[in-house]
Image (cartoon, rainbow, N blue to C red; front, side, top):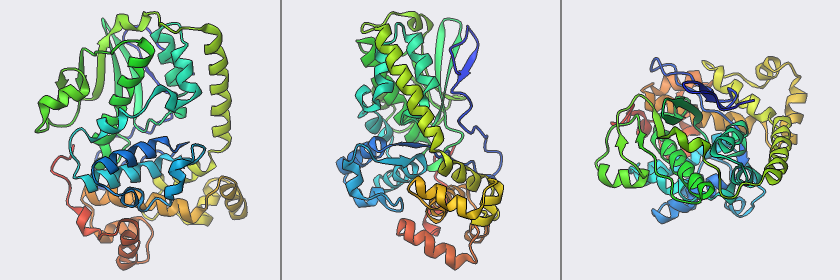
Length: 366
């Protein structure tokens, strides 16, 4: 269980995020694959439409049909969401502030019972404790940690496990979403002391600070929202202990059900971890201590297949490796393709483009 600690203590969301620091070009960090609702992808697509990016372009290579965007019960994986995010970032030209536009679309009701648990909490400290304990019920993709340091509290957004091309976008989105949540549960606009960001100062720095809602320090050691520590113990205006207990009980039940349905995520994480070459179905089954028949059956119960997951993981890893500077031949070998032409055909199917169009690392690489 994750709880808020005393001054100087670091608290994170029970180790569910992979935090592997990038140490070399040939060691790309995998993204994490969790199940979540469709609302996160819907918000990305809506911002894409406002930016002139077609829905089909945003959803390319994900296997998600447009009709799913209207189905509030639809479940997707965070890996699919990362692909949608990358599609938007690339099509829109990666403008600074794009993630803020997406994150600001989230409302507390978007999160369902998790949001109501925060709203009914006695204090912001209690709300933060619930938020981190059940963070897997949200649309967060970056790692989230809370640190108290003297008279300051730092909400750290860890982007180390994210593919390079979407790091800034995701960090912006998480910061905007947190601000929107805090505005609602505090009952007044939340104003941080400052926002710290790892990436360089963009050309629109002045308007960027307006989007962040506070002075921004660029080129910082980490991404963080910094606020007064006293804020944590402020009573919340809609506190209701009974409602909070009921909502938290439902959060526990929802999380337990997701744990029971997390086999596809385990397969994805195995595929992300075991590269050069990426394992086939029989090797994956052996690694997971099940038969290939059981692997097929359990994935079918979760509405997917090994081939679909392999395709999704290869898509995410290919973009990460290419933008890290690896050659097409190297990527093909690492991802288990028979030869470079086979990989190029798959890449064209995912993106409509050639690997060479992605290979040059962006000038804004961190």
